[in-house]
Amino acid sequence: MTTFLPKTGSVPAVKPFPWGGLLVLAVSVFLSVTAEMIPTGLLPEMSAGLGVSESQVGLLISFFAFAVVLTSVPLTFLFRRVPRHLLLMMVLLAIAASSIVGGLAPSFEVLVVARVVGGMAHGVFWGVVGAYSAHLVPKEQIGRAVAITTGGGTLAFVLGVPLATTVGHAFGWRVPFLGIGALAVLGAVFIWLLLPRVDHRKHLEVSTDTKALRAERRRGPLDPTIPVVALICILVAVVMIGNYSFYTYIAPFMISEMGIPEGQIGLLLLVYGAAGALGVLAAGAVFGRRPTTGLLIALGATGASVLLIALFAANPVVAIGAFFVWGVAFGIIPTLLPTRLMHEASPAIRDSASAFYSTAFNAGIGLGALVGGIFLDSFGLASLPWIYLVGLAVGIGLLLATPALTRRAQRS
Image 1 (cartoon, rainbow, N blue to C red):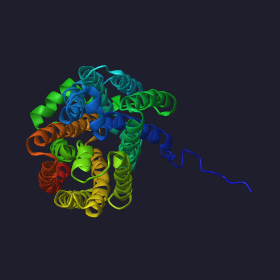
Image 2 (image 1 turned 90 degrees about the horizontal axis):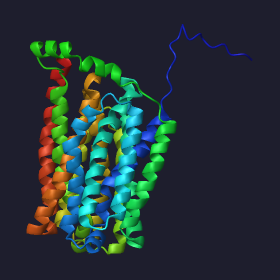
Image 3 (image 1 turned 180 degrees about the vertical axis):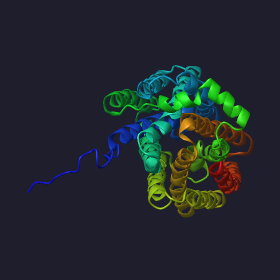
């Protein structure tokens, strides 16, 4: 039997969902986030190997993150006319180089320089990758596309950081750095071969036209979605400060406060990552259409679990169970926040919004590791969960203020 298909002129062609391209982006996110977070599970080994304190090793997270903060927006602007496809490949190669140099570093100072270079590349990467996934799909599929892409970051916690921790315990802390560097080179090859090209400049030409900008300034704000984008960026910075003031030092906390043997840290981080994967699934399946509700539930659940860890760290059943709940809840938060951002930001400012979001996220990571290190040296490991609880309380307050700005932007 012959099936007659309608002519393309009478029925609009439906563009297939770009699974291949989004999976390549997710793998790239996985590699980039793993490269950033490798030290978190290896603080004791790196401290002994480099002859510095654990709080100094924690600063490697801060140096990386502050490099993102200081360079993400200016470098994204500098490279705004470079094809996104080529730019993604180049920054992933830069991340690979910084990881390899870090793995070979003869001293703490050389490792710091390598981390700063990696942070600069990471900042450009995040200034592009979120908007890239949004450019691949129509607006109604942005949430799905961003969830798939950012799922690579969750996979970094599920597999990347725990595997790096396990390998580092078995073969030394340098091996995971070298391994992620080699994989990042391979990821750049996949980007070149498999990632579809996008034309980001069609919005760029409108948003950077001098006469148009001057006319907009005379009429009022450049873009009505800027206030809600700014609030989301502040929200993510506050929550990340709290999270990474604690999570950066989770390995020594588990060893000293929870009594976990050093050899089992990698396994518990794997459990945390697997819990985060469940959170990502919940974010897409349950809260995809209600991101604010999902974020409120996730922030509340995270606060409850961290409070239990703070109060019952010496009880392994309660503490490990709360650690698992923390993983599930926190898997939801970084998935729904960028989804909300891409929905709220107008197409003309998506690249800029993504760059500022990356800046805020990494400012939170860097400040969190720094604040956590200060509290660790001054008050001990037991003080770290309480910093997180303060950040979560402030984050919930900011989240409750977002609907009003959203309605204002919609009216404009």
